[in-house]
Length: 294
Ligand code: UD2
Image 1 (cartoon, rainbow, N blue to C red):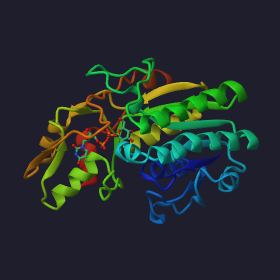
Image 2: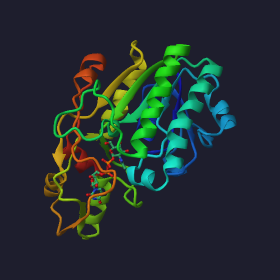
Image 3: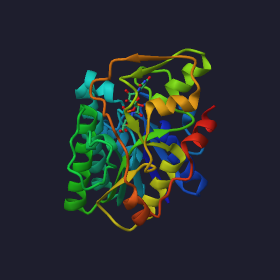
């Protein structure tokens, strides 16, 4: 089959691309390299360089495609607090543009990467997909808007869809060198440089960390599935606090700074739906995944 991976040079998109190619599929990538470089474009993938907001680039990328994995996004919560309009444009309007391109080229199916951030703060209870969303940041709102556009196009135009809500994805290739980088690559980088780790808040906030290769596997399972319009959590079902995370890493020093604006306190996944509908179970533990990043 022939698939389009939006954001296919990015952290998760490059793993999805590699797994598709390993499985004998051909892949086109559309990427504007806003948060990645050409080095992470798979050598066997076809590249369309451009933004998902550019209809001409999208039209070129989507021709002859059997299905779309939509991962191109502004992924940072703090960046969305600084520039909400950009986040909304890329994540919400960008998703709408992809759906329009799919409709006009008669592309049948989309697997959409949304986020557990749409749940907001629910205390320590694992989030189930039927909870009413309570976005706490423009980022969470923009991803939720993307979900709603997809459901609308599934309903109106019969485009088949699977909507994933990822918890905290980590793994090799995740960059530490931006103020908006994720916590694990930042911490590992600091440890390499023998610098102290900074915890925003008291460190009791919890996250459910899922290894990137498991996320890629879930994407392939979703594309092969025969249901449509479902929202599915992708996490491990186990959350740990940031203080517990730092204990696994043995830092020389920990510094506390005030909690980040828009930050969620507790985030943990109920993954029964992924198990039932996709026969998905994560294979890599946090400890195993961390070793692959060293
Ligand atoms: C992550 C994803 C986001 C979304 C969400 C789902 C990234 C960059 N963001 O947001 O796209 O899917 O998960 O819930 O992957 N922290 C520190 N010190 C640091 C960096 C972070 O204490 O040096 C804290 C931060 O305040 C937060 C936690 O670590 O409480 C995780 O932060 P993050 O930026 O890795 O991810 P999050 O959960 O904001």
